Length: 305
Image (tube, rainbow, N blue to C red; front, side, top):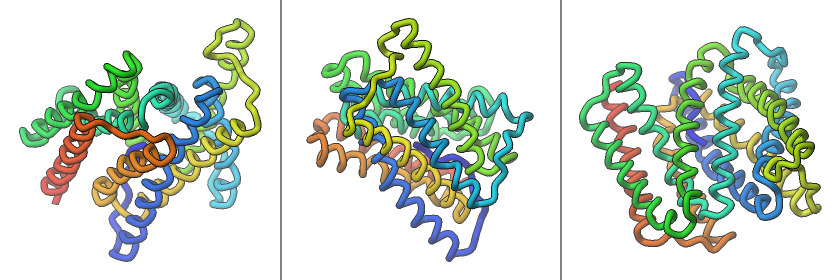
């Protein structure tokens, strides 16, 4: 996952609290990927995707009640919430498909070009001012991704390209999120997105079974794999809630550099749990992606200061 919205500028104590929450997010969100990868050993990816949205909706319901937020779906924002859910469904489906065979860190490193895609979209589609330095950093970042893809493509075939689809899908998800965040709070946004995602995914599983579409057919999980599915929904809820809180205490420009801790944590978990060890070429590509992303964040802070 990536930064969702810009939070307000706050005092030093609030910013520090936001930084701690962001670090917690980076430590927790890779567990969502771990549980998804564990579940994918026997559960269809479409079912994991549906479980993520259905369980996230159930977990977020008491949180909204506790926070006193309205459960009413704002109908004026329904089209954008629907688009947001669709892009997140695509992102989840293709990412889980990728990590079912790829190392976590390799897949996530490729997805981390999403900020570059948004930057280029702003430059060439929205007409935003983007200087030559940030454009150069984007190109270098894409070069780093190619270094990650090359050994993965040789080992896993076309599936290694799925994280690229995730990056583009998530970029559009982020653009919609930024627009919506000015009109509704992020916790309510996540709850309604999860509801819409569940409304789309659960019937798809039902009709997939009726039509005997293997990838859309529900499989009754063994107890252990039911636990993995619960973990998917739980860590999706917790991680996004931590992100929401972090953005309430600190601006996204402060939190953005910390987000690369997620990639490091994913690498550690991939090694400890799945014995994944990136080869030298992929590791070099990851470092390039991280440094390029940090440079883009630095330039944006300089230009906005």
